[in-house]
Length: 103
Length: 282
Image (cartoon, rainbow over all chains, first blue to last red; front, side, top):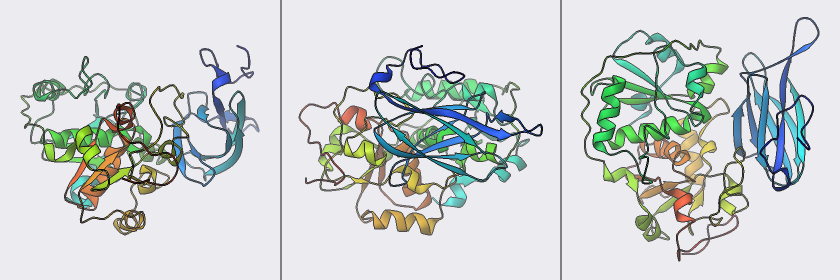
């Protein structure tokens, strides 16, 4: 579990030393002032020129993960009844970039 | 072909949910997606087990395809509407497959599963059962499938459209970024192939761009529509998406999909490979 983030996706079985992981969770503000995970969102990974590189649907707990490369990336999140949200993130081989996206 | 003949909207699908002659078929890269929820009445095709030979690297043959569709309850005169995740990559792959085996009326749901979900339309986990049929396929249509030797011979001669992401094309990545980088093949691209990522053809919600926008994109990228075209990617699914755009939406005549794609080409001994962002020389 070395390197795994509290509450995040398990990194069991993944050699983090060889990967530039970008992962996180999509959250939506709930009526009680708390935030709740969004399981039916789509997270797109755009490269430094804004070009699409990959896309994943979020899991039941709102989580997503990409195996990217060194450099700057943009996460674009689409979800029902919400405007798209862009987040810029830096990735590096050997580390895990954790991102929380609020929609 | 044209947009009207080959593409239907989410609303059209919703209006035809109870039409028994319209068969919805979900095909996903994530083969468990269907089981978590699918459009009412849709059947599932698993691209790894249903559509691929389980021993050789090849498709199921004509007899296997006939047995598959007969067992799933698809008739020759049914309207087959394919949809799936990943912006319809694997649905487009299956579309190409249905064309390869001569199904006459097959369409894609524009935007696929993503558009359906973003519209907050209903998904169900209800099992679908259709009465078995006696499906008859044609021999494979060789005019839409390219093999490796034809791809090598096309260098500097035909349009080669590599639809992977720029980083895969240049050799900086070996696979889409949501998959671990575990392949052992050489990185790079077929010399003289142009890079038009499949995603250029789609809006963020997965629907296809307009015909005018699509013509502009491929024209600006240097695609000469007087020449024959071979589309390729990593395993032939994203290039099915672009094959669909060029052949079915824009009506280009001779467009083939190279399903061996980079996982085959990048492992061949002795063929030329170009690295970097430029097409390279023949």
